[in-house]
Length: 256
Image (cartoon, rainbow, N blue to C red; front, side):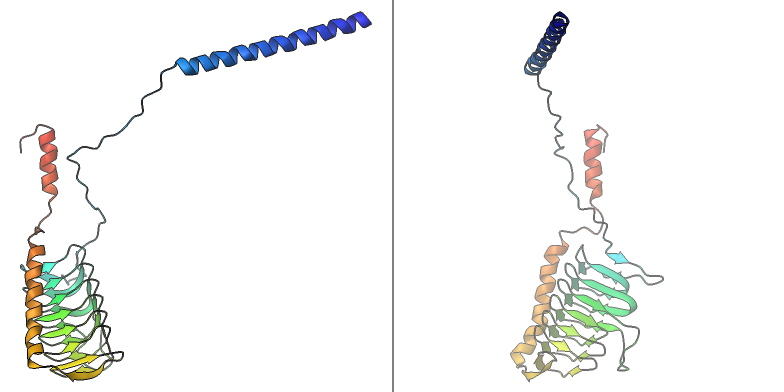
């Protein structure tokens, strides 16, 4: 009995020792292969120097609605990220700056000669005005509308300045040669008389404009018109994708 137990114990010890030796052998072989094997080169993609970096956001500048198509004069400047929808008319010498939205889906919107609608403005027109006045939005000639303003179914007569962040509600009327201070709110049906300075929420009379101030109003509109000419020269009336097509053809050896 004792001899048989001794034989069994010897076999167990020899098998465990041999298995440990086999594990050490394969581990050493794996380390040797890992150290001797050359590292694989990383695949790097080098962009072509002729690659164009375009912003494909898919934003449409002109949005026709049914039979209504926005009309833009030839020499009017409309920034690339402006949205004109429906019954919108932009007359000669006027400019609509970055991020502005003119929504003529319910009624007409007219931007007169040498007027400008600055950054992030929203111009809209309702079906009808609760005051019985015209519901279309009319911005006459030599008018400056400050940035972030909201205009809805209002009328602005020639040579006026609308300050930044102003709100003109339905049926409001700003008569010629008037100035509205920044941040003003004109309630529905409110009339701003000619030659006066108004401001506040709601807008109230502040003082009468001097003759020099009224003469500066159209000069500001003309100055912004000249500035828009510099921007206008940077944007072609057609797409510039053809330049990239020509580069691609030249890279393939195709005669352009």
